[in-house]
Length: 172
Ligand SMILES: NC(=O)c1ccc[n+]([C@@H]2O[C@H](COP(=O)([O-])OP(=O)(O)OC[C@H]3O[C@@H](n4cnc5c(N)ncnc54)[C@H](OP(=O)(O)O)[C@@H]3O)[C@@H](O)[C@H]2O)c1
Image 1 (cartoon, rainbow, N blue to C red):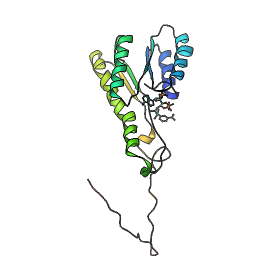
Image 2: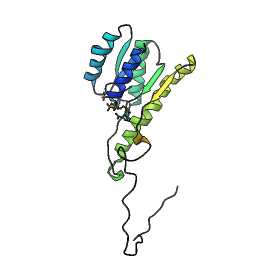
Image 3: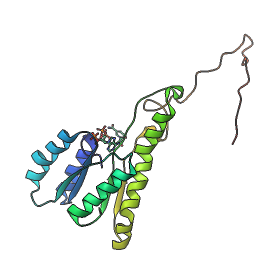
């Protein structure tokens, strides 16, 4: 999944070197994936079956369509799933992140992996073998340079060093 650029294309190269047939995907970058497959992978590995599929993983329907294409072109579901497609914008302040941006990020980076696993797991169970690799980022579990800042700005204090206002805590 998501092989048109850096980590995805590196995974594709490594898997090809180990004799693995490939169903590679892209979302918008057809030129990169076509160059990777036609100029590099196919000449180096003529015995491998390598297919290209366009999919927007934010759409469950498009993921389903991709699996239908893979069934037709490879005659089976993947034995190895690499869920690499990722989306992220570096927005340091939580108040600058819209709900739409949050929802889209979760949909591409989390929900898509769930749908992809559901698409391959029955095949893996039936043959009692399979491998699933999830690609993620440190931004997925912490703040810092890639995510929201870890600490909010310190509250203003009065001259005696005490906080001017008590914070409101909501416990659910
Ligand atoms: N690079 C790093 O330093 C780093 C560090 C930690 C984690 N990661 C994680 O590793 C993964 C790959 O990183 P990368 O740096 O190789 O990313 P990248 O070069 O930006 O590539 C992202 C890939 O995801 C695909 N993609 C994006 N949105 C998609 C969508 N809605 N549907 C389908 N495919 C979509 C892109 O396809 P198109 O190009 O065709 O649109 C592309 O192939 C990501 O999950 C990222 O969070 C990267």
